Length: 446
Ligand SMILES: Nc1ncnc2c1ncn2[C@@H]1O[C@H](COP(=O)(O)OP(=O)(O)OP(=O)(O)O)[C@@H](O)[C@H]1O
Ligand SMILES: [Mg+2]
Image (cartoon, rainbow, N blue to C red):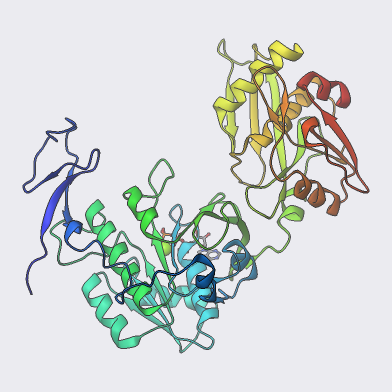
């Protein structure tokens, strides 16, 4: 077997060199050159072997997407209706959060009438068997193959020809054709590339487990996320009993969709009504606000909590969980300038209850009102939801999906909503309070 041609590629600027160099001569960065397979020779192999036809856009629609269930309806919904043939899904998350557990459970349900190959380089066969026993999984169609060599995995795939592949994980799998060690940038890329190529050719879906870095992003090069069709990430706390699966990229559906699970001693269980679950323990105290969150098509009600207390040290603290602390600093500054709510000698803590991370700016107004509520020690009425983006001069800006948010709030018995004036929404059975400035919102509530 001839050796594959490799080159050394700078991970910063893309400079290529035939030999390794400590410093990239192009961008001057140190230690950025990594050995990779020379993709320039075969970069077209991801495209199907037969020549594609040139047809008007409408003629292509006959190529219907056939979706198959993962066995979990909330996961199907998050993926846009199930797995598509040939779809490669990268699933990432912190150690111990439940990636292997979820995939073993999905494999089991998928293997009811089809063959599934679960490849694990992370655990031995008996370790997986132990987990399977705890999860009460005993399916003859579910094949476990503890292996780390990509070449051997591909050979077994040819022999077994499964209908679903799980690769746990990409970081432990390595190609014998590359010199670098398992988990290196070039290996991770090669493994993902070759597995994706196989899945597209055979038209089978695959889950690939990816580890994450200390900072919480997916380990390995960004190209990894470009190669695969879908990226899903586990959120939530390892020590809590709920797990949130969030779709952050999807070529076959919308992003931002979530599926919520509960970790029990029998494995992960679906949470059918995430909103009910997130607000079930809502505090009836100052500083607590319900915010209808959505990045995808399905909104969930979340509880935003703020705590404002006299500062312990000369520099007051601003600490957040599930929310950007810089955004909090900005909101506090606006509250001070535009509404004369001063917190400069106070510590401010903000928490998104339930372990969700909220990145959309529509949460601003809810955070601001939670802060004011805690500062004034006055409760926000229990039947009220709040959303809207806060601008630098205190203006409340319109946000997406206003009607979806209101409908979800109404479904759970909320009767009032503080929303941006520009949205101009009405909904039966709810009193909508449109506000255009942060001081107006404070006046309405307190
Ligand atoms: N006996 C048990 N009862 C209840 N929960 C358990 C039990 N054993 C394990 N768990 C849960 O399963 C989790 C481990 O899940 P899993 O091994 O699927 O994680 P992972 O994401 O694959 O981790 P890694 O990245 O290390 O492979 C533990 O954190 C724990 O919450
Ligand atoms: Mg695992």
